[in-house]
Length: 117
Image 1 (tube, one colour):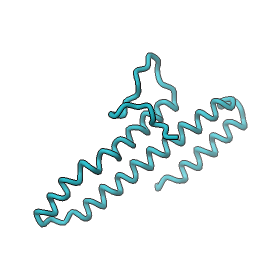
Image 2 (cartoon, helix red, strand yellow):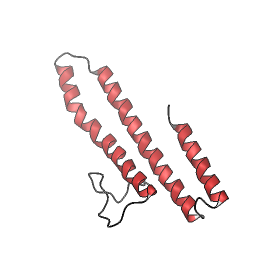
Image 3 (cartoon, rainbow, N blue to C red):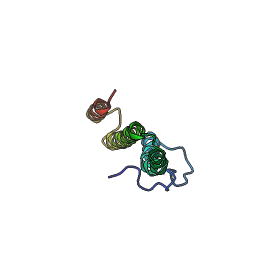
Image 4 (cartoon, rainbow, N blue to C red):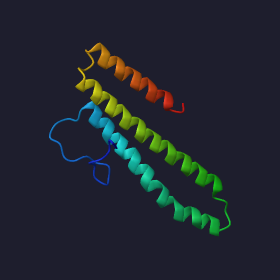
């Protein structure tokens, strides 16, 4: 399930009267990263093609844009998974439930280990 589903094309959430919870904030941020990744690449292609027509090599710039797009998608997936893990913890008893919290902690550790830092 994509945690950013239900968001408008600009990455914004439907109107809500109350403050969003932690997982909702993660979903909004996740949607923003996905939107950035989806929109960035097509917008850059014409400019890069124009550089090539002018005889300038855009290969390193293309590689940089592709790498940034991959990082944005990774952040989208990580934040989406973190929101799911938080919701699962809350449904299982919240942070006061030792087993629910331990499962959340392990999920968070796993997600963090996937990040390339």
